[in-house]
Image 1 (cartoon, rainbow, N blue to C red):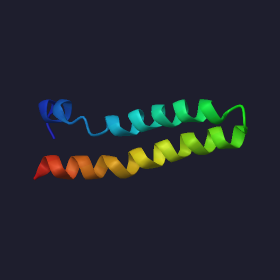
Image 2: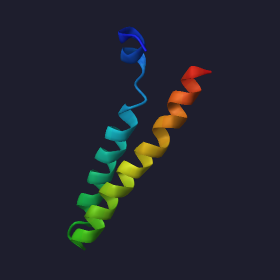
Image 3: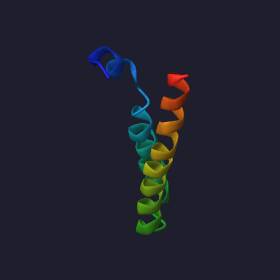
Length: 61
């Protein structure tokens, strides 16, 4: 993969984006339970890891 191809591939941003969403949702539940905050962050990371290959596969086709 050359530098220009790597620069155009923004599918890896899905991990960071969903992690930030998980943190945001986690802050809502933080008053209720700290474990819910951690769960939201982990769910965000997991969703990002699932979405990233799907996005990159669609770009290759």
